[in-house]
Image 1 (cartoon, rainbow, N blue to C red):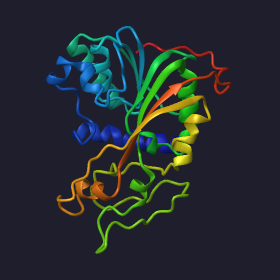
Image 2 (image 1 turned 60 degrees about the horizontal axis):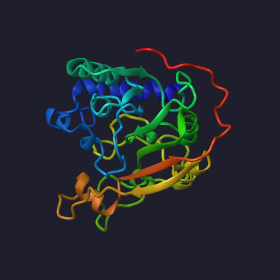
Image 3 (image 1 turned 135 degrees about the vertical axis):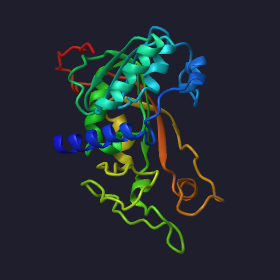
Length: 268
């Protein structure tokens, strides 16, 4: 697992240095109404002022500073030092307070039990081989009654060829593969070049949440498709293959998973 972490850490550090996709910081216009900017689906109801929010694998200077600007007490954890440094820089520039930590989403031992009212996670679980470990940790650090808002790559998105065959996009990867996906030659928006990625089946993506004390309150499949786009582009492919699934989950019961931790939140 450490090999996977080190590899993906290096990939994301490089993506930040090169200013590649998914590494941009929050814009001036987004800070004018930060809650609106981070709540496009309307899944956050009411004010988050004074709430404790964990932005998990959410570094980069986008989400965490916006949550902080909306009045939340924010901790951001990301495997990439470069992404965390961007959070620190934006927070300093905007006069915001946030706790920015380098760490892996499947080992939050630096955080004590029941620390957060909300955990938010952008597309990132594809970078760990075992999503159930991630859910165990989220269940442990989230308070009963808190929400986990997340987005994931759909299995079919990672199973299918990046470019179309004469009769469409072929499924080329087994649904039951355990190891990292084979690398692709070329740059494709549905994959981060060089990163080690893993397929997670729906029984783990959704069922795994239910088994650690969550109820699924909503589920969305963001539509990024455009039938008229050039074949082989992200927009064209997304018309036929849904790239992501977003999940709103409510923590409803205590779980024995991970409850022996006595560690504390570290200071940045």
